[in-house]
Length: 116
Length: 111
Image (cartoon, rainbow over all chains, first blue to last red; front, side, top):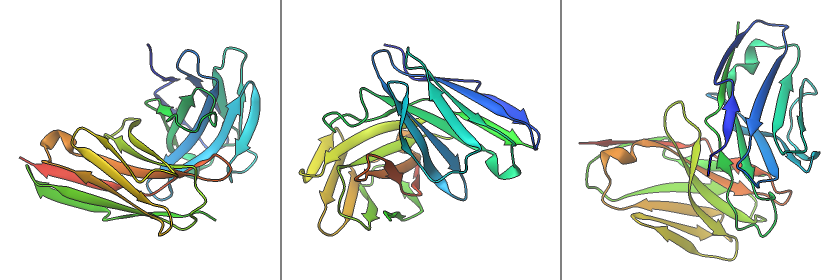
């Protein structure tokens, strides 16, 4: 079974631009969560999507948005990029995110974004 | 607001040693606690998941315990190997089903 895939793996953008990151979950998984990892703040939850609906949201500004498609693939968009958005963006999938609460989340390798 | 703390931030041990990583959390209203491993530049790999009603979980040389009332968890690694070198992250699933992560313990096992 293929794991979680994220594209692109690396990205360089300049301040003010926007960026879209993609995540393909494990086949059959319906929940996709996004996280931002930085040296200063560590791993922080961005949002979670289930069945094309945002089910949970962290404390990030509205410049960070996402969506999920009917095949469970998810995209994350950051508009008006700032230097502080430089980070490793990780997505994780699970069967349904809360179901039996016995499931773990499976993480992708991440997209490393550098904002200049 | 749930906060997760991991001690120590970094650890260097010779191969073969048994070691303990610590994790504490401020709000005992959790659904589960998970330990992950992260290799440099890579994603996270789940090691152990402990439900809030459980006390411990074991997988191979790894054993994780959970004391929900005191807000503590430990990850015990037996007979450490150089391949165990990585950052170990503790995370709790809070009452809104979000994973809240600690800042991690960076482990180096010297040959």
